[in-house]
Image 1: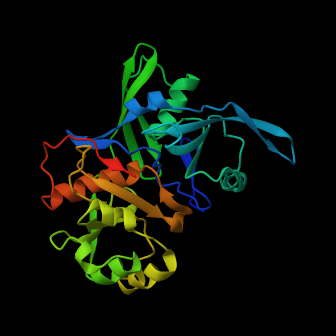
Image 2: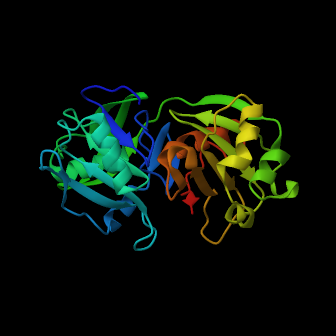
Length: 299
């Protein structure tokens, strides 16, 4: 269990704790002026905001929560997020059990100082914690202070910009063929000109560059086959972000999938936590220029 205190948003996945980072954002995102712009225009397509209650059997206390379909490219195709806006009386064990019961990629519990990432920012704006008189909030997450810039359309929050921590470039995995084999890929399906590398803007992610979008689509990720490869390099099993720069009809820069079964997320439909280090990785290795500002697509 990761320790936390007042003024922290506690972000649980199913079933492990992700208190250090909230990655509710992400399918449409790109870098601009050092910021990660998240495709929050798609937030206007949120399909379900459920005003429901969760009962704690021992005391019969009730807690209202919000259920968001975040960044759907079409109806009912987004990333599921649950936000409990009033969670100061819940202990960590109960939070974990509630998150497990919700069975969504992410469940957030907001404590008194309301420290959200993108998806939770919209939930808190809807609940009135954040108003149009604010153009920026700084949240104390497990990864440190996280500024979120706000753009309003009248009284409604239209855009939110999250500045992630500076990237940390980690280990290069020198056995791409072995990694590819565990993903069900032939060696020719991995790009030879880009490394398999761990990069972190709060949560370490292994980036796996592939040649074609078809190869991205064909990936099958499972922990048991790939675990020995991570162990060989002295690493825990990390989230894997497979991607291709192959152009498509959508004019996107990157076509990608994100797997994090060690966090209880077999496949994350959209991830802001990996989009930040992805942009840094692509710039570091010359795969894109700093002026590129086209939406990135995630399956």
